[in-house]
Image (cartoon, rainbow, N blue to C red; front, side, top):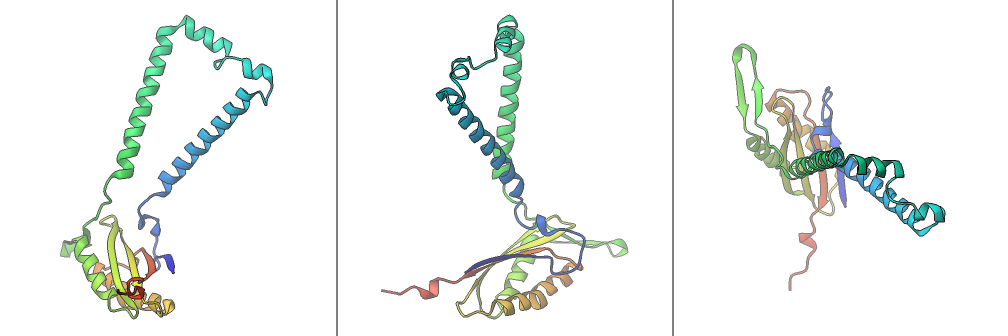
Length: 208
């Protein structure tokens, strides 16, 4: 069993979309670029093979007017090609950096006003939540990570469960015993949380 659920754990205005690592943008852009490249390749294959007509297959790659303009203005054409190449290189470097950068683990800001503001490290919150989650019935392993921003934090949790665990009971205990304590510690009514459940397979392995 491998179940995953996003939970706000309380009524609030902030979307839990920031809890998980933001891969939706990368996936969308990669999918769009892949579809465009595939469509262009299929179109070129159809034109080159003569499926769309022998005349089209024999035509040069560039339109005659475009080819004539390039020949007449080699300096401008070279400059445009160079700028386009630089833009593509910059976008590629940015894309790689954006995709491979480590995920931030923000420290959390508590309180404010006349009493001042206190900072809580994300690792301290993760460890506290992990210790509480270990007490949930049926849970044999826990991984917790803080996400979001210092002002609007979130959690991402991965729980390993025994085979006979009641999942509904796990959800209830997590919300009422674990996440409620975290919300209280952070002095917030909303703590966006993504929870992933996995079966603990290690107990089912046979020792030889």
